[in-house]
Length: 496
Ligand code: HEM
Image (tube, rainbow, N blue to C red; front, side, top):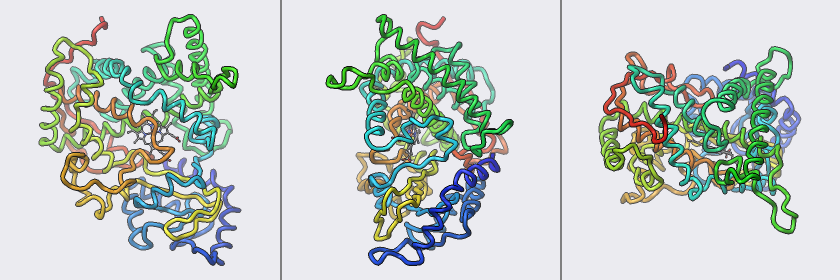
């Protein structure tokens, strides 16, 4: 995987060489108005890419970035994956990255080819607003409140099938299965079995090559991934047709799931009721939601479980919160939106976990025009790399940042809140994660049942504070834990 990633990144970026060279020429004669940030572009093409990738594999990426900041300050230039880049950190720079219209997203070419060119990450301007607006309408709180019961059912069935009766489990792969199942139910309206199983298989194969060298040749990971993506698209196209038919015959409602919702959206009256999204857009954005939404949430839950294994005090406080909520559910009733809203401590624990181990390491933007940042000039064509981890570990923002202190996220606490754009695990501005609310609800529901029904210990020999980035953070061996069962799970009502 590491070699594939390195090659992918190097090959995918050969094209910006011209921009790189142009950037070097320009950097020799900086604009009289504003200069380039400090730093060095290093060797052509290679630049500092290998150093960063090595650090990601060794769990020292945060240190690597911090060393840059110590040397050059929060805004510095370097060369990553073949393109001249400005690395930025800190609330002020984050704000510019999130809000500047002159900075557009930039994904590796393999990602766009596999996920589809009409996915929201690729879109800009009016297209981005239209498609993102449609996703957000479904993912907003008053729509999601209807989904809590379904998420509850998925979590309980998962725990009954995969955790109950086991002496030990490996957490990360199980959490990935669970979050896939939740997305398949909530976003695609797919029940267990049938298409959902086929989609899970296609999707797993698709992810294998998503960061690979974009070479469509026999036996390459990219070719296998493209084929799997085609399989997933066929399954989703059949799902879209089925949803349309069932809406037309009044057998379902737009609010049933994201796909039903998207197929029912229309342009305003003046436009003759044309569908708001094309079928290609519905499929591409279903795939991107699945890709962006299941490993990230699974990573968050895995690191919460790891943290709680080492923090009995926080676990005991959380158990109390969940016992109070669960006491009224002795007949096996599902959790409600109001129950989830009461899980305040658990959400603070989740936020602190996201602060310390943000699932998304960072992402790139490309400058459509010259951009002024912190007094420096980012030339048109350069890329910008932002990473939440360094802002999250800044002692000027978070006192003793390496301490796990969920009370930092207590809005009632006496301490003044950190400045805007200091907690950026979900990004910010017009591209802030649209799945944030869904991630919150699924995490809280899952933690409720875990804390009420199980206790866990890290398996002997497992290191408890390290991880590698792959590219998401992954604890050693996927986090094997030994289990104790504290109370039996009640079956979901309606299940036999
Ligand atoms: C703990 C869980 C999650 C984390 C930490 C997370 C993090 C992020 C971050 C940092 C971004 C912004 C990237 C950038 O600005 O370059 C983002 C965007 C996005 N996320 Fe999430 N995410 C999570 C869960 C989800 C879920 C459950 C979904 C499913 C719907 C989702 C769908 C998306 C999409 C579609 C975008 C692109 C938005 C756009 O470009 O307008 N994410 N996410």
